[in-house]
Image (cartoon, rainbow, N blue to C red):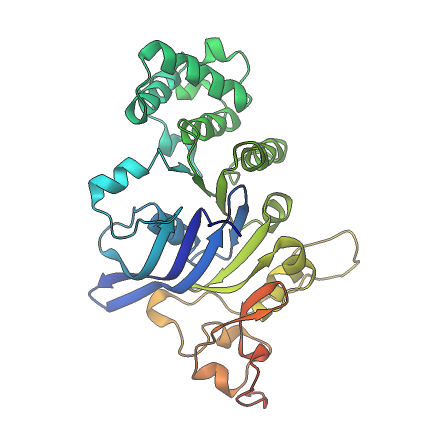
Length: 330
C-alpha cells in the first residue's frame, strides 16, 4: 500500500483548567489514503472538531497536544513551529468550516480573498491568480464566475458561500482537506450538491478528505470509511457499508438504530439512554459503560484497546480474545 496522506498515531489533546487536566482526545489513531473520504461521526462533545483542529495546528490555549504524532505524507507536523505550520495550512492542508462567514471576510470581494490566498502560496501574478480564481469558482459550480468573482460574501446564498469556501480550500490543490460540518446549515438539495462536489474532489484531484459531521446520512452518502467517536476515543472504524450494516460497538449500534429507514416499520426509533459525559466526568474503564446495554465488570475498570475484527477496528471488551468476566453488571 502507498503511504497515507494523513497518519494520526495515539493522539492525545488536553485542556488545562483550574479543575485539573481535561482529556478531550485520549489516544486515537487513524489513516486517510490519497483520494479517500474518512467520515468522523459522533455526538456533540465526542471530540470530532478538536481532532480536526489538532491536525491543522489550531488548538488554542489552554488546550495542547499532550502526546502522539501527526504525519502528513511522511512529514511529522505536530511538532512544527507556528510559522512552519502556517505555511502548511492553506497550501498542503485546506479547511472547510461549518459557517462560510467564518472563513470569508465580509469587507472584501470574494475574488480578492481567492487571489490573495493563491498569491500567498504561489508565485503567480495578479492576472494569473485571478484567472485561477475564476477557474476554481467554475469548478465548484458558481454560475457566471467572471461576474461573481467581484461580488461580496453577503451577495451570495449560503450554498454559494460554502462553494466559495471550498474554492478557497482548493486554491493550491492541498493534499488534505478537513471539512468540519460543511453541510449542516444548508438546504437538503444544496447539501446533495456539496456532497457530490466533495466526492468529486477526492476522485478527480486525489485529495484526502476528513469529513467531520454528526449526520450519518451525509457520511453514508459521501465517505469511504467512517470513524465513530465517543468521549475522545474512536469506538469503531471501518468501511462505511460494513459499519452501517453491521456495527460492532454498542454505541455504533445505537447510532445506526436511531436512523429511520424505509425498510422497517418500527413504531419507535432506538434510543441511547443518558448523555455524553462531560470532560470533567469521564468514567474509568470504557467511557461508554454508563450507557451501554452490554456492560460487564471489566468495562468499569479497564479501558478497551482497539481490536481488529474483519474490516472493523473496534474498542470494546466484547471482542477480546480472553474475556475478563462475562457476567453482566447490575
